[in-house]
Amino acid sequence: NRFDIVFRSPSCMPTKPELKTEEQRGAIITTEIEMFMKIFPGKIIGITGSDGKTTTTSIIYNLLIHH
Image (cartoon, rainbow, N blue to C red):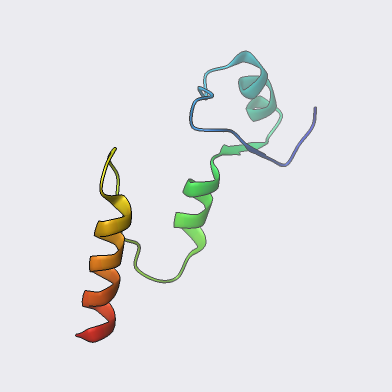
């Protein structure tokens, strides 16, 4: 009870009564990724999907470093 910021997991819906109660008390309800995206000063590249994220990340890294 009475938190300033509540970090919820992506599977935890923001409509849960416990979160709504804290929000009504003035708490910020957010996720770690959402907060990161708000405060990180650089560009963010999102890579999603079931397969190939490591390969895709490596390719993008090499393209950005070597060009």
